Image (tube, rainbow, N blue to C red; front, side, top):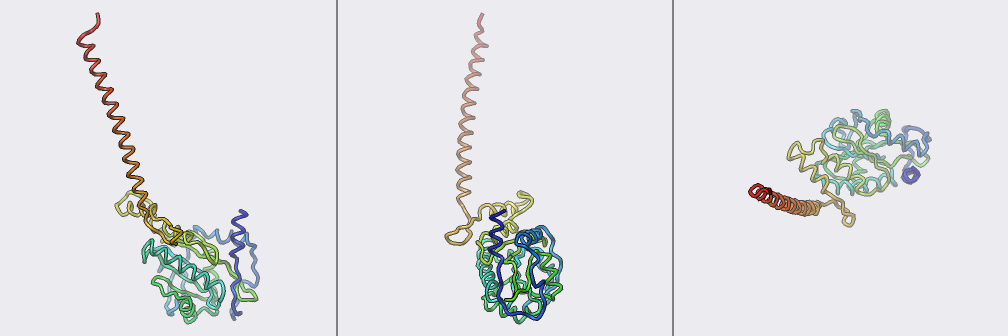
Length: 282
């Protein structure tokens, strides 16, 4: 608990920005770091409601539009000059690795602007451009204040006004294909596997491992796709198959030896029995 808390305190960041015109959640957080972590983690296993937002092109988007694939949700506000760009760049790097390993269309990404008074489509487009985010399946969304507050509560995200703009959790949320919160990731920067591993479980995981060839292939990819920290990339590990083949050969050889020995002993005993039958002692 101490280590977990210290990590959480380290990622409780101050997002620097000019003061906006719309009131945010509170002017001062009602949460201690311990309570904030508990609030965030309580969202795991919770179904995400069908909220309605506007994307950077001015189009209406519903959360149900994202059902059917895992979804990664990051929280930003467009006037942020400090933590939000760092979070976005860290996420972009991890998303690149994840899509290389899992497939280009295997999951979707949302950057959610929580400053309801300022995060309009024009500013969302500018923020995406400034951070070089032009990726298929990655949308920048915002909503009205009531929707933003309800959505943040639903997903365990905490933010509040501060003299410098907003204080907020550095949080990335992973949602499964059915719309249930699966994992929370914390920190302005985080290690790539913290995002890719839960996505790998969701993309390749199946409830019936041998129901079909497709399920079997997914299980193989789940266990054999491993992270290479030196390259910061995932690769398919063929050594597992080599180990399985070698292990099978060793076990098979031992089995053949045991069977041959058993058969040799069995034949010897049969010969003894036959001899005793032909020449019984008197």
